[in-house]
Length: 365
Image 1 (cartoon, rainbow, N blue to C red):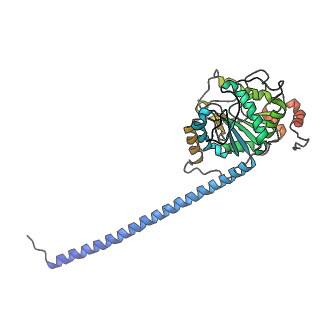
Image 2: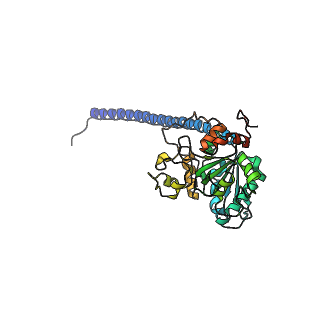
Image 3: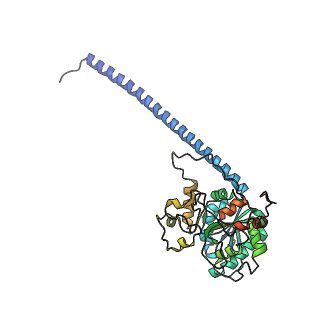
């Protein structure tokens, strides 16, 4: 075995020491680099959060403003079997965004102080009596709690911010009835009626329904029925301007069916829904539907929470929110009549100005 002399051993130890020092310095530099990257990453995350916070702050400021300016009372038709199954989910999602929320049921429930008992018999065949008594109750007890009143079911989901955005362009002093407008030709319902995606009444429309129509057999059916939405259309026929709640591009905002059915490339023209619609516009595919969606029907409790999460919590990365949202201008009575697309209204423009209490300058008295 070859012996290692002292000089070779010295060179080896010197090289080992140098390598150790270099490795130590590199390790410290690398750790510092990683630490800086982590700090920068945290700062970037913090900066991104601030940007998001600014957007959310703006959105909240605008939604808070509309919440205070466009006051909406939501009355929800429900049933004792649905109290525990559906009401907690509605209350904890979109119901929180109503200025006032009440549930109309045939039975009281101490778990839900918002329930108002309507003394009618159970069954769909008694919906009309339930509707009339509800509208009378709201008129007598809550007329001054809101400017707009929405009738919905316990399986509706409503994007209240978009509803307020739509209503901003209207005056609650005008008698307006808004929703997904159907046009099936029932007797005395020439102006159509609103379907199950939600019914919106201005304060003036609710007043006229109760002060003029509800107990007048020549204007409003007095016998009970399941056709409550049709009968509302009959009762308000000559007392309100009916508006299909589409956007300026004729795209739907109120969905009486599930969105999946609306998104089909083409709807069967023999399907009942296609035959009921007031406006003869394209129905199939994504182009059917507005980006200011308001309401959908037939929503399960699980779907309510899913929609709540997707709408209010999910923000696609890289897509900046529009921070220059412009509220729509107020529409004149003449524009509303034209928007209603009512041939019967145009010749009676002066009469409608009187009905809606508007002077020659279209200012509300």
